[in-house]
Amino acid sequence: MGGLKEIRTRIASVKTTRQVTSAMKMVSAAKLKKAQDAILQIRPYAGKLHQILQTLSASLENVDDSVFTQDREPEKVLIVLISSNRGLCGGFNTNISKMAIELARKKYASQLREGKVSFFALGKMGERQLKQAQLKLSGTNHDIFSELTFENCSKIASGWMEAFVTGTYDRIELVYNEFKNAAVQLQVTEQFLPVSMGKEHDEKMGYPFIYEPSKEEIIRELIPRSLKIQFYKALLDSNAAEHGARMTAMHQATDNATELLGDLTLQYNKARQASITTAILEISSGAEALKG
Image (cartoon, rainbow, N blue to C red):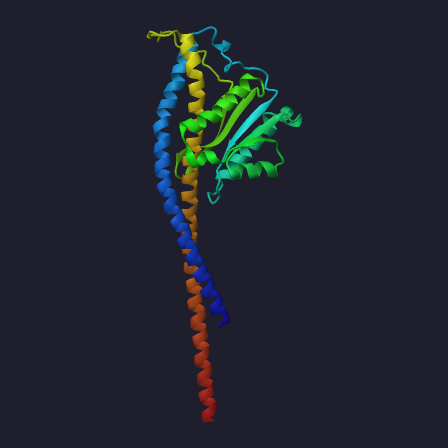
């Protein structure tokens, strides 16, 4: 009966695990709905703002005069890795961390050898991966996810903008998971600074707008706002992608626990039947021996 007791213990353990994963799946589904609504609402605004900048910059000759559009040789690079503070979300953190590390080792190989590539980790899981890879960390911020607002994101983005203007960094890259749906997250690399402005424009369209104040002043005002919106959108994307990945992972874990539970139940029933059969045989043999 020792075997039966062991199987019963495993069945109880798997049932408990299934309850936990099922509960986590429901919690992630609820959080995903809110996060998905947030990213879907900001995407049209961010896209239109970028389109306005592209249209304006295409009509100007001196747009490169802006401090945020100066494309200088990237001697000092900052790579911002956006991950999560918690695990249990499949390959969400591992995949994005690998992309950030690969970006540094391939695109900025010479700068990395000279120690001029720094990482900024948003999320504890990403920080852990970077430390394991023994890469240089210039800073971390894990509290941003507890209160994900535009105001809080703006403060972080403003700090990087100031670092770019003062020459602390010549290139800043964002690496994060883009939300596509609950089951699919796309690993994305975006150049944060310097801002890449459009130069091509279809002359047939013309510029049927009246600008007040001037185009130059509008661009100078829009570029910082666009950068903050870009960073805020990246965080919202990553937040929604995290909940989608965790919900999918917990759904798969629940299904696996259910399948394992069925196998264990079948194994238990077979073992129990075998033990009963053995007991009946022993009783029958004893009865026959007494008759003899």
